[in-house]
Amino acid sequence: MIEAATGLVLRTRPLTETSLIVHWLTPNFGRVATVAKGARRPNSPFRGKLDLFYLADFTFSRSRRSELHTLREVSLLETHSFLRRDLEALQQASYCAALVEQATEIETPLPAVFKLMSELLGVLSRQLVQPQTVLAFELKLLAELGLNPDMATSRLTAGAKEIARVLSEANWNAVARLRPSSAQVTELRQFLHGFLAFNLGKTPAGRAAALGSHEAVPMQQETTKRLE
View 1 (cartoon, rainbow, N blue to C red):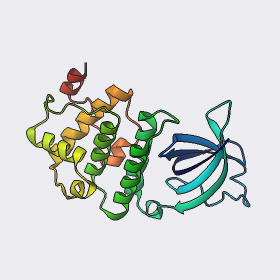
View 2 (view 1 turned 135 degrees about the vertical axis):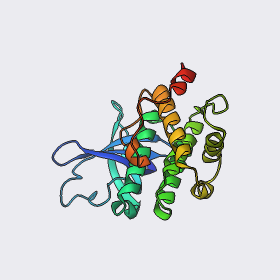
View 3 (view 1 turned 120 degrees about the vertical axis):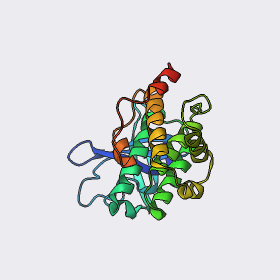
């Protein structure tokens, strides 16, 4: 069966000397893994169309035996070229993509998560890289997954709780206008680290780089206590 989709490339890796495995995030099929046969050859029709965070329309032949399908055609829509020029933006996008992969099931429709990831790339293309962008993405993704942390019963300060509410509920323009203190960012960073680790088993690599800081260890004792 041939399927058609629009998707973001979340990750690629070599399969053979000539072929790639491409992991996509799509609205209708969720996360999809495809084999791009011959994509690493100089004359491949896929050449220049498959790279991290490329947005494309594509078709694939669904496998009857596995979750690895065969990529057939790709029509490139957007390369998000700014990520090749801004390491900090790339670090934030890469961490958020890894979080999506860890937090979601393969081949489950994810229209809201696809929209959230697309919005994030738009934000990173036009605004300064800020730690609250990542914190907002984490909170908004948790809300979409029905895993909202209970801020009211946490031991976060009142100011940090209010920042968290805005990050979770407000649009991206409002998120960018926020000016949390470094102490509030640290509070939320530590709280969410513990919450994500408890609910997902671990946090993806790259979180500290995405936030422009080193993760504090140990985490707030109250976070673990609240989750037990």
